[in-house]
Length: 81
Image (cartoon, rainbow, N blue to C red; front, side, top):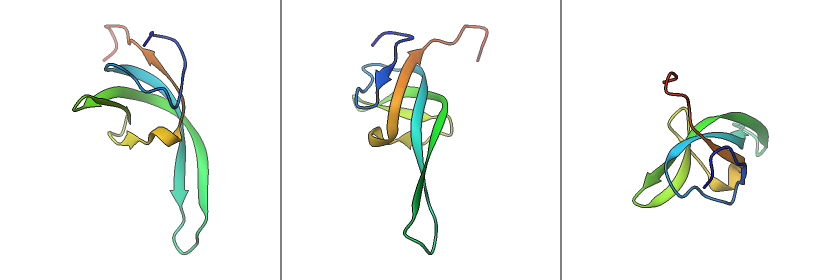
């Protein structure tokens, strides 16, 4: 996994790092069967759970692999926390 290189959503990370992620956010409306999909951009974290890597959004929830459009591992400057 190279820093600052875009990866497709079906290419999972192989180590932990910060990342920029473009993904689909699905909204279910109560009382209807309609599902709306919105494209979101934001920062995330490539994290590991028992050796399986996934992308976590800044709210702490997992982003499902099928919803990830693209992602890029990045490294924040040390001055940024």
